[in-house]
Every structure is written in structure tokens, then in C-alpha cells.
View (cartoon, one colour):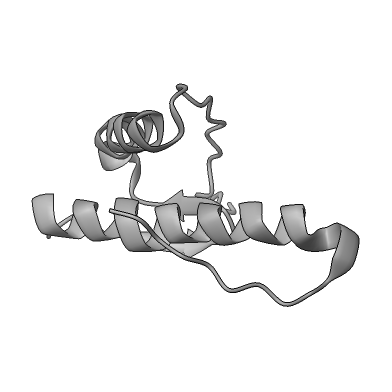
Length: 90
């Protein structure tokens, strides 16, 4: 399948805009959609270029992201995990 992107004529920023558009498409339209189809009970949220889920689903999400992105871009990406839990105040 081929996807066509229409970009504004922004001169030297065209490459950055194209890469951001592709990244957004892969995260939102491919990975999140596939996750919801395969694992409808896993909660997902997106913030910029991140996908958030509960800690118990991190491994499933990371494996899905690695598999999908490797298939689309040809190399296995690396990821940085962040703990977004709210610390309890005593």
C-alpha cells in the first residue's frame, strides 16, 4: 500500500515535516489501531511521539511497536521507557 502526503511549501522544513507526518501516521493510524484490534482491553494514550499504557502492558506494547516499525522502516528502533506514575505523598 502506498500513502501520499500533501505538505505545504515550507522550504527547508519539508523534510522535518514529512518525517513528523510519517511518525504520526505510524503511531496513531498503524500501531494504536493494531493494538486496539488485537488487544481491545489494553488502555492506550498518546502524547506527541509516545504511547502510554499501564505498566503491566508495557512489554506487549513495546513488542508491537518494534515489530511494526521494523517492518515499515527497515531497521529496529530503540525505545526509552518512562515511568509516568504519580508518586504517593505521605
